[in-house]
Length: 185
Image (tube, rainbow, N blue to C red):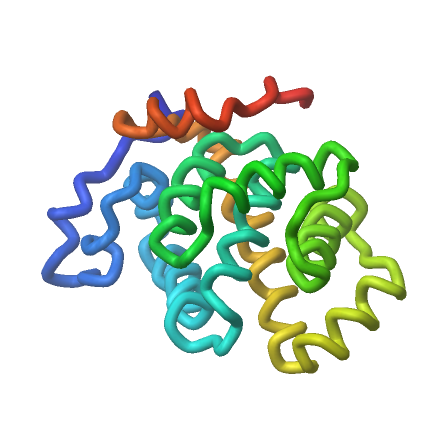
């Protein structure tokens, strides 16, 4: 059970339809601040529907943030979302290998993107070589959008952790296929 009670999202349909449309328990907790949640969702909408950053790349970055922070909630939600965006099981296996410091079969852009997500999440900085490579490969607009995605989901995983939002039922098979290491914090 979360630290704050879940607000029934269907009760918000008339005044906050964008919040009511969400089904995740995290939004049932965040809805204690309706305007704050509305603002959070606005940036999330841009990243999902307005940014030109490839959806597969976006989801790989989110999954990496979730893995580095040991957020099972975000990890399994975004592995599932990632599959819909073109992420494969092999991509997730490769992401986990990269997180362990092993070289994977991912392309250079994917490896650099995962490196940026790990560095920003763990160290709050990106080394110059990774930054330059992604700037040249993605261009400045998409590099900024990538940084927005990484920062946004670093925020989300911390809110989920703060409020101790549990993972909803239905993710058991993903948890068996991709076990998360125990939280170290």
